[in-house]
Amino acid sequence: MMRTGVVFLFLGFCIGLVAGDWNILGFMGSKREEGDKEDTAVAAGLRNYCESWRMNVELNNIRGFEVVPGECVDYVGEYVTSTQYKVDVQRAAEEVILFLAHTFQLGGDGKDAWVFDVDDVLLSTVPYYQHHQFGSMKRNASAFEAWAKEADAPAVAHMVHLFHHIRTRGLKVFVLSSRAECLREATVGNLINVGYHGWTELILRSPEDNYSSAEKYKAAEREKMVKEGYRLWGIVGSQWSSLGGYTTARRIFKLPNPLYYEY
Image 1 (cartoon, one colour):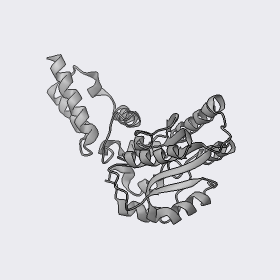
Image 2 (cartoon, helix red, strand yellow):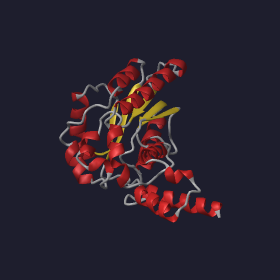
Image 3 (cartoon, helix red, strand yellow):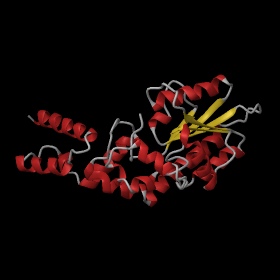
Image 4 (cartoon, one colour):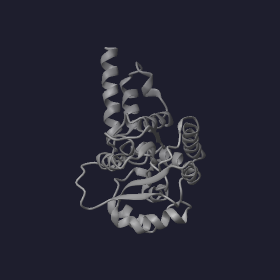
């Protein structure tokens, strides 16, 4: 009987991780009414639950979510505007620097390369999501593009320093984004305004591409770099779609991002 109860509890959690309208508070209340005390996971506090949800997003265990669960919106908003978020990004940046210090050897032929994504890597979309309930609403492409055209996104903490550190090591920097080609002027202006410059190429999605997902698009663009002779030492992204696929790099570094899921 206990094993059956645990299985049903697990299935309840799995459904909740995908459906934004599932509510752990109601679930916990119903379990208390039933007198079910067999599984201590039910008694976990809301903050513990939301931290677990965020962690499993980062680990890519939770995929394809369209919205942040309603009961975790405040927690996610608190996290992405917190000192802890900045410290987490800083640690990732420090790991990149350590990797290069211990592993990287300049080839001398101008073909050593590094790849950065834009959104929530070089530029922060947190201000956009502050006005859209921190991920509790489905992402609206038109609204996001209108915001991006304002070219007023701040730099992600510690990324300007990392960007230029990588350049000083002699690597060519490619900026590969799922942003549409129509946002090129705004994106270039925004990047320059917050301190980025000197990249080798900014690659944006054209209206003609037929890729079914961001992951396939980015993998195909990296494959072009490899065919041109570039050695991809690393990628920094905030989405797993920026890091995976059939053509990747020697090392991948993921920045935290529980706000949305990019296919």
